[in-house]
Image (cartoon, rainbow over all chains, first blue to last red; front, top):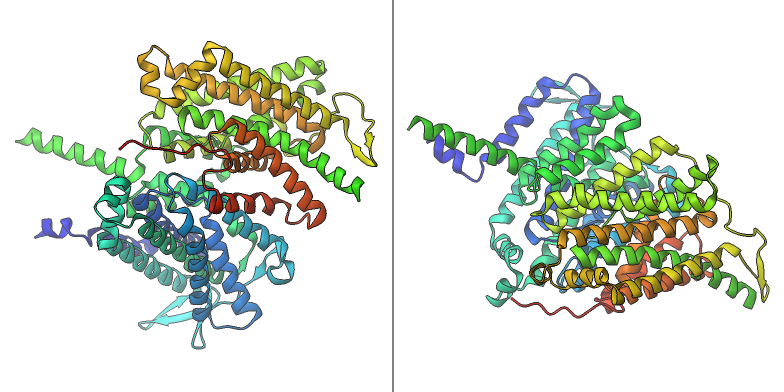
Length: 335
Length: 291
């Protein structure tokens, strides 16, 4: 029975949920909570990006642009125009999805890595606009964003709440919220992968020509998954803006886009849980390297190169292959 | 009117020639290995920074330039030998991430060695600008154009007249077949990275007196070069030159006549327009793939 459970599709999701439940036991102060909440939001973004990279075989070098657009849409709509959080989040995501569709549809008809160039360009253009339209965005200095709010109920890192009779602080409430969001994001991604769309996508990744020969409309599916991954980024950008309470154009920067794509490749392209690990590792790395301030960039670059050279499949797939090899060896020895 | 236009045109052609050299570097490596080398901009930075610091130590200018170019060449070889070659089974995406890692690494070292400040390099010849129909032409611009032209002609001769050049071309066309006729393809890849690094560093040196130089100058220059290569059609040598020059000119005109805030957006809008309407770029080859 345990075996069938371990084989099930939900295994990973349940393990992730357990980790998220146990984790607060190891979190000492608000700073830890802040870090982990950021990780969850970014991990959810990367899970969306992985749908594109891992399953459609396309790279986006401008995902921070979509993330930043979501963040600023929320910031401007709720802060400047007094919208409620949920409509801002939804309208922002629809707008970003539309942009992704307009850009992706013509370009994804082409074979090759043209989408990477187009997304690089779109990301830069978004960042430049955010930097220059000072009246709207506050320019490079950034802008404040109000707390997340649903029907007059606010979720602020400074508030305090009661949950099932327990008193919890605002940052703990945000952690719980972000954990639920991450689980939903993963659940949706896993289901998408197992749906007919996911199967069509994997066939595209395997051999695009073969897929189109058997009647898969490859361009359509690739555009669709690109739009979905952009919407993931926009939604998470909106939440990130609410959580941080203050945003600058750095959220849309090329560096941030590179960080996203690196998380995917480092964690393991195509492995939903791998990319979460990638997000965790790359978010922790600057903390670990903070003691070597001078060397931070050198170490970051070096780690990136070495992992890619020696574990081109990514951390989690390499580790799990290693573990299962060990286990098979052990089983073989006993028999 | 005319003076203004000429002024922008001179600026555009000068910076465009630099973009063209960077784009040629991208093209070389792309053709040889299908890798988009995101560390290309770092070769420029190394060229400029090494020249500045060597001359500051009292090394004569010409020797400093030669040493800086050699340093960049070694770096190019090292990049291929120690970062790209060991990951031979990897996806193209993985290789691209490796070059991104390499660029962060090189930039990190440059920041430690040279600090974060901007460095100024002297003009190669006179500081006296030349006046043409009321527009001012910096003497350094002539150096950029002249050296750029020499490099392009040199590259053409290298690829059409020398055995090594032909070997690189053969490898880029069909790696397996090249190996079968006895070309050492690993060697060729290393050469492609080296030549690309040499091109980049020379571009970085000649343009440094105009743009100044600092440890992080490679990011944006490298990206512009990439845009130029994409506009010209990734993989085409003629495309890289035309793409670089047209990007430089359009950018300078937009900065002059429209808004300098959106100068950088011009490059990225151009790439989108080209992808939408001329997906293979201006000179990109039509790809026919056998299945």
